[in-house]
Image 1 (cartoon, one colour):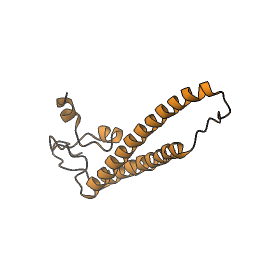
Image 2 (image 1 turned 45 degrees about the horizontal axis):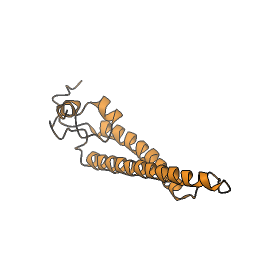
Image 3 (image 1 turned 90 degrees about the horizontal axis):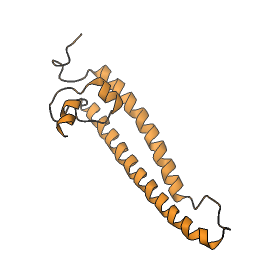
Image 4 (image 1 turned 90 degrees about the vertical axis):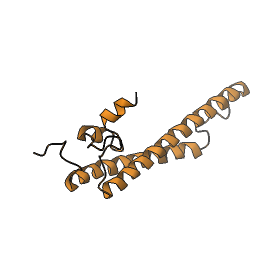
Amino acid sequence: MENNSEKTRYSDAELQEFKDIILEKLRVAKEELGLLAQSLSSPNSNGTDDTAGTFKTLEDGSATMEKEQINQLAARQKKFIDNLEAALVRIENKTYGICRETGKLIQKERLRAVPHTTLSMEAKMKQY
């Protein structure tokens, strides 16, 4: 068994394993983004058009808030997708899993949990 400190990069087999994880997360993330976009484009689906005028203004306010929240979620989801796609590029370049601060390999457990990360826990802790 190779010692992690001596390894400078993950093997092709390990990179393939991470690629599979990332592709699956990417598929799910794009699906969720699609659902968010769908809910943004669909007209008020509550079907309360016939309710009295007083509720209408309250509802418009909450609908606007909800739209903003969905927009924020969609923006966050898009950023997540971009990060995952950047990770795929690093896999192709065989630079995936190398901490951009320390130059050491990021632990596998961390990469499995946060596959788009570019920082080891050690480097992440230094940020605080």
